[in-house]
Image (tube, rainbow over all chains, first blue to last red; front, top):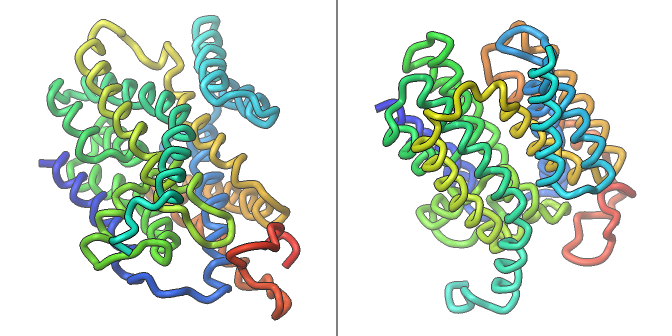
Length: 97
Length: 245
């Protein structure tokens, strides 16, 4: 029940924007805002997943792992490698504390 | 439009999307695997864990739903959390809308292809999107998302504690990669910092998912950046837009 409801909800949310706006050309100011939505949303996703737990601020081994991977990503190393290092560092830290 | 459905442009965009999608698909497969393992621990059956990934296909929503259930929340709360987490697809869908052809049903169907990595990669950076690149990038991700959950659900029981394995570091790294690709100019960097800080500030006071949605409000600074009248988002040329505008 929950699973199906969640799927339907997701599909409706994903379909809403495209249907609502019906392929009209949008003004330039709208494009400027849209372009900036991605960095805002992605940054919020990253920050809340590594610096918060539920409703409190928290750091953990994965914070360190993701930070190391972040430096590697910045240096343009491959994503799969960066993820492997993030997981490895996190697991190592958890094993040693 | 329909007559030229498979133009050369579309074909090469789709192929490029497939290539670009592979690294995200590999990581997504791991993420999906960790989802299935956690779902089993939360009391999902093997079939339920797999079906969730097959029909929902939205990582953050699935994890949000799961964490509410694990935390003792009810079905309504779990659904709300996943809906709020997904609300960013509303923003993404609105951004994508002008780049999609067809009637309401077709447009809604095309909107289903939106997942974070595909949306970010299909974003041409001028307010328009390459829809065939979007479809191409999503396809391998859907395949591995399904496979990952199948593997996780079938073998997850023998993995034990996934926290110990550090699988929770996958998800943020995935989004960090997308974020770094988006930091094209000073405006996007400023918005990223402000959005992150705003989300973090809201964590203690807002329900799960809301801090992330609220961060998108920061993008409204785009309104204040008045370009000179000659500089508009071009279909060609002026590659530095909006940095120079």
